[in-house]
Amino acid sequence: MSSIAIDIHPTYKPEGLEGQGFFATSLDKVVGLARKNSLWPLPFATSCCGIEFMATMASHYDLARFGSERLSFSPRQADLLMVMGTISKKMGPVLRQVYEQMAEPKWVLSMGACASSGGIFDTYSVLQGIDRIIPVDVYIPGCPPRPEQVLEGILKIQQLAESEERRRRESPEYKALLAKYGIE
Ligand code: SF4
Image (cartoon, rainbow, N blue to C red; front, side, top):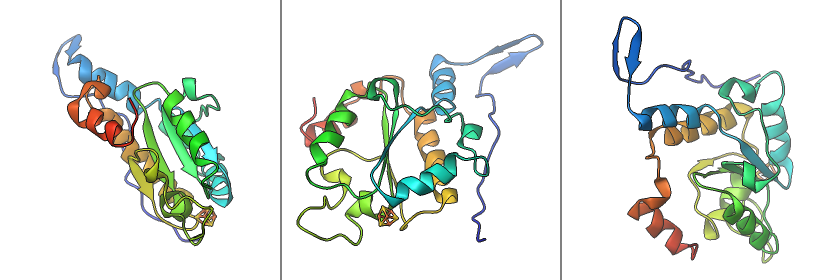
């Protein structure tokens, strides 16, 4: 079995002031730490990449180590949309509706060649990448990606969740990004 070395760090305390019996830091850092370690994924799985995700959830790879064992099949209670598999053009509006129903802050992870670019299905009926309809934060290459790659993608999302400002949606960059997709 091939494997990719993954740089895993245990949760650490953010920068701050400390002394005997106290520790003080900024609210942004505490919120970032909490968001990073409690991502709730919504698996939007349509085909084989979804099977690799199931392997990532199972005991050997154990996504629970990253605080993400609680999958959500309700967009209202999810903050990480994981798209895995071939997305047909007919499915596009459904995916977009799911994205729009998720509350902020939210992130999108595109898993595998099909979700990211249409993969081998360069046909009239397949969406040639989900970033044509919704913004994507992290892409995972491969057909299918191995679970180690999925974990690496989750770690990248964690880095974003940790470092982004609390009111991400209020930032001009984010507003401009959503405006490009016609999302208010
Ligand atoms: S990228 Fe490959 S493994 Fe993943 S859904 Fe497409 S065909 Fe299946």
